View 1 (cartoon, one colour):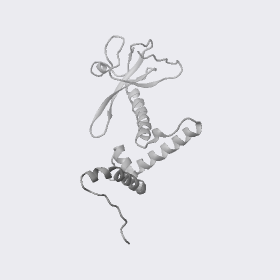
View 2: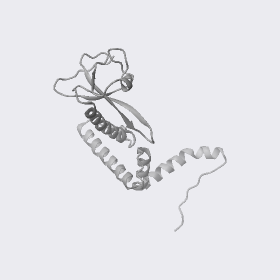
View 3: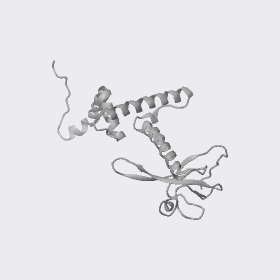
View 4: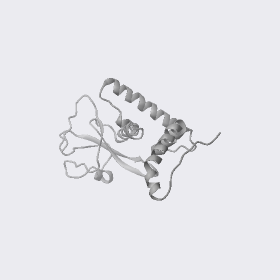
Amino acid sequence: MVSLYISQTLHKILYTLNNRHLQDGRTVKQLYRHGKRGQQVFLEGLTQPLTISWFWLKRAGSNRELRFVLSSHPYSGAYLVMLGRKRWAIEGFFKTIKHRFGLHCFGQSTKLGVYRWLILSLLAYLLAHWIDQWSIPPILDWKATCDLTLSVLFPSVLWLRLLRYLQISADIAARHGFEIILKPIPT
């Protein structure tokens, strides 16, 4: 059971899983078909009512995911959806910069470390975003955008990655009777 303290002065906007239970025994997902956006619900284990709404989040390709957003303030369903979409965009940004750009390995134990992490994260995101906007048509896929950014802006890093991969895979080639030889092209 999850407990949640809700302050009276701050209005929280948060997400919940679609299998979360209400006090009446139904799941949150059942509200999608039989509920109304912006209605007050009581989650199991909580004593205060929360306003709930939902929206379809676009994913890679043409896939969509149903997302449920909660608030401690009785916002309208449409306004709560707008806030939820904005918050999800921010969450997506931080997830992207953390995992696609390798910044989850960066030390964040000091105030200076956090500042460095934020600056590097923003820089990596902006570089990838600009490359994505310059590609015709825009890719709209973070993995492909990161790979494109790496190949356009940092070809030497990509080349070193390839050399490392070839070095690691040399024994596989040898088992099949091949030898990998790289030599510079005479100029």
